[in-house]
Length: 323
Image (cartoon, rainbow, N blue to C red; front, side, top):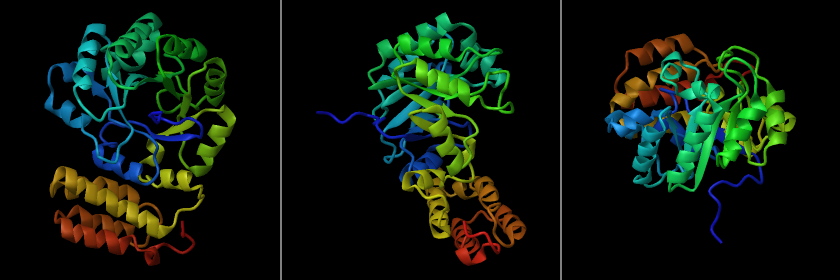
């Protein structure tokens, strides 16, 4: 009997797609250290169909990413169908995910992302198109709980009836963007109303919050995005069931992220890694400001690796910051 792509018998820990942040190096790191599923950055169906080099690059995956989901956005059924056919020809993809949650005006104005929540018939037809045309094992949908008003169960049932194998639910409306309070009650209502697995998403920022959300909503997993930026070890903590993170493990994860950046982007990966080091350095270490100043002037990968090893040594933690 073939092993299922995803095993929902225990909670899944999923990395959410974040534009400009969850690239292949970041995904490979969280996958190595505990994430059950990684998802590509959101890719425009139009761009795929027009053979955008950048979009095809975004589809690339690390050998560690098994299973792997590619998220697409689109508002035109015919274009989405063509995009799916392109993805059908690419090996290593296990899931095609439809974005029905992105609140960014540029995406919404094209009728994609959370704009589909205004036309559930259309959303359902696009899901059906993906399910019908895809040769991948699973089809999933990322949703919000409404566009301007909340209609969580209605939206989720359309996903289920249209053939989605599972859904990820961001507990805000589009109007709520990323600022309003996340409605975990709505996620719980969805979980009780549908028979397909439900992944909870929204403001899951640490180990304790992830555990509380899982328990409260009854969801089959949690999807973490911004909570993993600067703290990719959250997946290690969840997988190992450890509330605290060993500083040596933290340094190992940061060093692995750096190595993956170099492997994917070449030496320029050192420059691109500066933004990540700015975030990592805020985790309670001595001399953080001076460290950031120095890395801003450093482009040499070997020198940067030395700086990383020294700065993130456990002995450099501020007093009382052992985790």
